[in-house]
Amino acid sequence: MAFMTTNVLKNLVGRYSTRLYPITTRAAFDAYRGELYNEIEKCIFCQNCARKCPSQCISVDKEIGTWVCDPFACVYCGLCVEACPVNCLHMKSAWRHVATGREMIEMQGTPPKPKKKKTEDAAAPAEDAEAKAKKPAKK
Amino acid sequence: MPRTIIPFGPQHPVLPEPIHLKLVVEDEIVTEALPQLGYVHRGLEKLTEIRDYNQMIQIVERVCGICSKIHAMCYCQGIEQMMGIEIPERAKYLRVIWSELHRIHSHLLWLGLFADAFGFESVFMQFWRIREKIMDINEATAGNRVIVSVNVVGGTRADLTPEQCSWILTELDKVEAEFKKLQKVMLDDYTVKKRTVGIGVLTREQAYSLGAAGPTLRGSGVAQDMRQLKYAAFDSLDFEPVVETGGDCYSRSKVRFLETLQSIDLVRQAIARLPMGETAVKVKGNPEGEVDMRVEQPRGELFYYLKGNGTKFMERVRIRTPTFANIPPLLAMLPGIELADVPVVVLSIDPCISCTER
Ligand code: SF4
Ligand code: SF4
Image 1 (cartoon, rainbow over the protein chains, first blue to last red):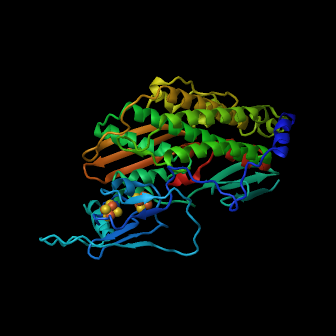
Image 2 (image 1 turned 90 degrees about the vertical axis):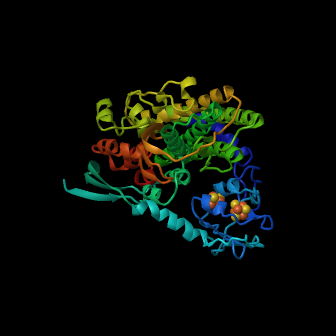
Image 3 (image 1 turned 180 degrees about the vertical axis):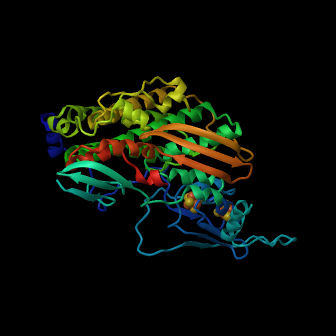
């Protein structure tokens, strides 16, 4: 125990190692992957982010131009940010706050004008992914 | 003397993990231990059917938080071997840096918990305070504190700038200086020795025949470390497995203590030799074939069996984690010890039940 004496004295008179959270907080580092947000006016509703997401928590509707993310299912991996072709997805380098209820991040943008040949595959991406997922199971 | 069966866990004040042991005790001495698992089974392996092989990286990272990087590295290496991808040299070194940082923080966490298990609260807090520096390095370089998510098939997603490298080195110097101050307390203190020396002995033969892994195996005198297989950049780094011959709780904690210093040294070596260049190569196609891959986790050998069928979904991902291998040795250690020593012995294998059950 005697080996600890200097350490103990240092701890007694030195600065605290902890912070008085939430009164004092440390700023998050620049690279920190915090809350996800979408610059919706840039979004082209290509659904790349929804396809790449490992927890399948993004749903994009091309027809009506909505982008919805479930922040409680999101694992903050940042794959969607990398997958976005127009770089409209970002992650704030800020701590995520506690929440008392389940809320979705919903964003409404202007959907792209439909092409001349109208495609019918604009179903919700969640269903889309599920249908794809079932394929290997069936065989 | 009447036999009593004591249920120990899954919720227990001294156990951080939900393991349940039925302890048969006679007069405060444990005579038999029966494990019961399955409290935190999550069925991650089954998810291979609905998540493609790239998304599986994020899933295997969640097998165990503390070794997340190493799980992902093992999985990615397996897929790369299956698809015949040669990853850039820089990515190999980056993988080593982050995986050794993970080993450091895992061992620091364990040393703290172990001290806590025999009642040394102060040392527990000292170790966790040191650990915080490593978590900050993770956050600043990879974007998250625990599940850093830096691996992709074909390399790494994140990169280290020269400033970050020198910052890591200065932080590691501080970590090492503070850590070495605790060496005497952890390894020479009378009370610590009283609680750990000669408790839960696993002989060399037992460790070998029961298939122990990692520090449990090396604490019993077997010099086996999966890093000797020279995956990632370990072929060009110098290290020797840390071996202790006591086979008791003290030897296992000493192995982990010295391995932390060794990992700090390995990070330094890797940063010093970090080559320039790309961090990832583009990957085309889907994995096909089968492969097995072994890497060294903080807790021991991690084994992956991967089977691909040419589609973007894997056919099978089988994970065998070190704690799973260490449960039979644990059951061999328990008979003959006092009931009060059970938490110390259980913790000495560094149990991680969530990774045992996936
Ligand atoms: S950060 Fe990851 S989990 Fe969250 S929405 Fe993006 S891809 Fe999905
Ligand atoms: S990937 Fe980008 S552009 Fe495409 S739907 Fe997602 S946020 Fe919009």
